[in-house]
Length: 313
Figure 1 (tube, helix red, strand yellow):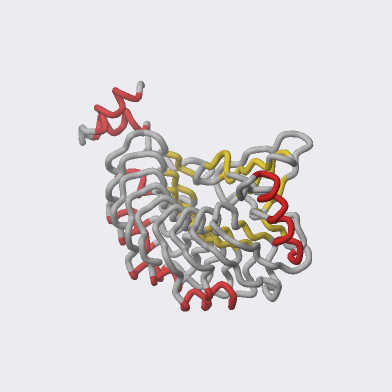
Figure 2 (cartoon, rainbow, N blue to C red; figure 1 turned 60 degrees about the vertical axis):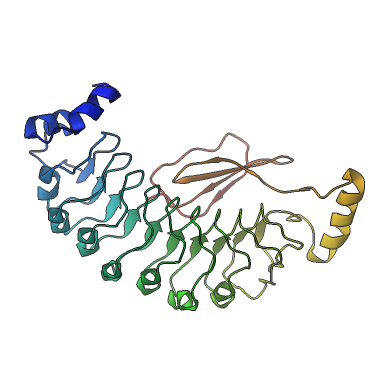
């Protein structure tokens, strides 16, 4: 069925038309995974909510603006993908999934999250990229198991002090926001392994040498006058990344002198980005491909350097 015809059929609420879009849902898949992505769905068929043992449900790239309350009956669901839809509010029924550990909400129209989200005590990975958040949702600070948070490409200007209470948080992705300063709360979070503040408005970075768990800090595309000082073995992605900290000012002067203007000497601009893959191109050293915790995996070209941050779910 072509995309145009699918779009037309999606407007018709009859059971027969819904079956044309999603196929036969009379039996749960043997692998307990149901993929209804990219079907132009405007409503979730109730038959999909009848599989009490379902573990993974993919509803990405549809036109869903709401979900039926019956979704809350999927007591065994561990992964729910709702990215690339039309959600303006997170349906509260999602917050009643007791086993949910991975939730994809990127590329919707969300500007707030309900307090009931705190009921997801098993949630470890949350994607909120490319939504409409101007304030950091307070309920995120009440998710005790949260390990990976992708909140890039919103309009966040600050992070709350309460974020320090997330003792399990390991990877924090904040690229493409409106941060004018490096968030002070992050200086208290010694367990952080990955911090991405690419494409913000940060002008000066504090030392990060005391963050014992840090493995990677991405700070490219900021109007910064210094690079963050980091401890041994920590990879920096951004201007002056390959320079010793004490040589940054000297190297910057050489660049300005040679080119007549400030330029990125070893910066790594983003060349490709998907909801679940981060790929950056480094002009002098080939490609660095960074995987976030995601559903898609792309093998790196032979002989090119790869950093595996979190295994895909």
